[in-house]
Image 1 (cartoon, rainbow, N blue to C red):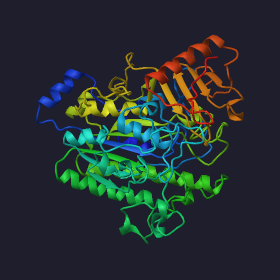
Image 2 (cartoon, helix red, strand yellow):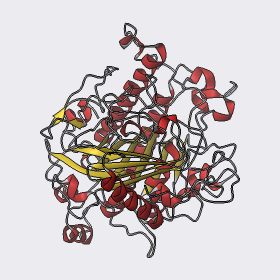
Image 3 (tube, rainbow, N blue to C red):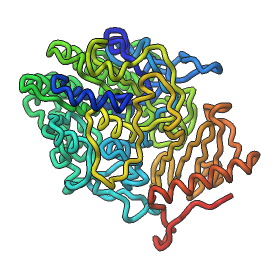
Length: 520
């Protein structure tokens, strides 16, 4: 994340994972002491920001040390997304498109289980020609278990600012207030803003009026950018909440850096001499604007006197969509292969940083989660791990019998390995058309298998792709033919994981039969 978030706040967990409470007994002691306030929680989610869209080194060299790699775009940031940082986790995963990730954060479940496996088109069912007919296009429902609903019941004020995209038009998930949020500013059914410009009413009255950002009418016809307007609204709501002496959960979900690639005029001069295309320069301004937003929120927390008791999580919702290069090549996420929507690492790897907004070793909650600096984690983690981590921080339990696929990340946040934490990741996308179609990815340790239900030129004319990410982190050498035993082992694990998650499958062209994976 950034130099301010890391330098000023001594931001301590870079990619690592979310949350705290390392020791259960300490947690119990904390809440027995009525003088200790519950920690405030901020989830700062950036749309379409991949692991290489920050100058923080999330990749490592052959010795496992953070490695800086020349970027195809240079981002000028002062606050939250670049610079030296602390404890880093090398492999943090999201789903390859947005709605599945966002619902996984809310539910703690893998998309294969909650069945919202595609980005949700708010106006029409976009399962794809052979997509599962009963996939969860409606999105989250009023009676679903959600993170904000559980925190709200525990006394937190739950604040939603920015992009929702939890459900289609006409369904409860289109309105964050139906999902346990006390406040909703700008959240709706769609994923991309009609416009980033206040002078264009954020899309109202344009050809993209169906995606005009709501609740920001007071900024219409003013020279303000959407990222700044959302930050102002978030900070005002934080001030109200702190004045009322309530613990808060702020879900700050920027529309940036998603297309349309409107240039943020505050930062355009930083990139005007670049040799990159105009839309790539605009993408860079969106990154910088989001970075400033994080710094502004951190400054507000400090001025309100609650920074020491506020834990911030920063992450992206899927791989980068920087407008550079082909989606299956080593391009915008270079040296990683692929981008948003793809089955390669560039489509699923995202930055993740966790830190106290203001380090204070004397703070009771920080004593329970001392976040070290300059540590490195290599274990696999994913977006659905955020749910159980935050609940553990807040001393809240999910309903009995509710299935949580995520696992708490407390021990990893303290800089220690966690042998109990799974070293696997399942990514299921049974849809088309998109950058990659009808696929499932399964990672287990160093190995990664990709299964294509309907092979195409982008799947190397085969059902199978197999990579050893320790030896080939940029996925250049498909070992499906040369490692038949390993391929069978990985495919067996993939199929078992799919069954355990009660996953839905693509269907035959006539729609009558599911297309389940085939063993090699």
